[in-house]
Image (cartoon, rainbow, N blue to C red):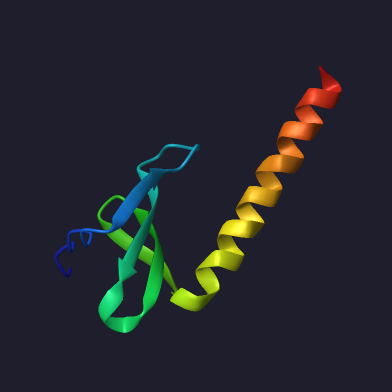
Length: 78
């Protein structure tokens, strides 16, 4: 089994809400002008997605729009 590589200096790890040692890693790779999103189960990478740096703002906008919708939905319910 290959060794786990550490995250580049510009990256983050997010733990899965289900637990079970699952995580999502986000790593910026300036040398390739992309962001790699990877899914991990323990020390094993189970999937990767390479997103061009130029597409990152669209991804961020999508996440922010979803968060705004959630906040409005929760506020309307309360």
